[in-house]
Length: 211
Image (cartoon, rainbow, N blue to C red; front, top):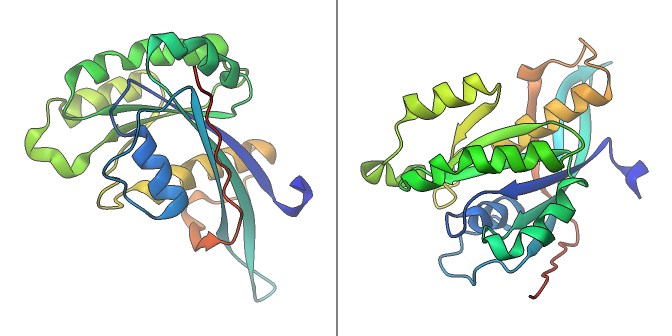
């Protein structure tokens, strides 16, 4: 039941095909880096629960329990009708690209427009995948950061392989949605939140639509 949680966050991950979106979802939900997997057909979904520490109250830790439903989408055009049906359900869109793939960055604009046209709420974060391959980088950090600023998006570079900046993406999402839920209550301080329990036991959910 949703009453068990302070927040149930519905997240959609969008971006070109074969850039590492599935690896990001698996690393966050399973703490596992998968090196080989089939291309996503339609939509895959997993869930994870985290506890966010929010300082102390009356000498005791004040925590927020957050449940994520994460939808990993196919990047191919032929599955777009399936993907679009999930936009309206999402509260936050992770727009992803591969820092070693310039075309995937150029296509970020297309994915951002898709989200704007189909999402009921306008919460986005831009994520550059495969930061462990910096020596093969084709997209400069300065270029991406400027683009993110111009579109008022937070930007993260992350490595699913090295588990770098993975938790930080979802911390940002949870904190943003908690602030919105509480009408931007000033008592919620961004800098005191942290994932205090990375793996709260929960049954993972997997679903796949076949074309």
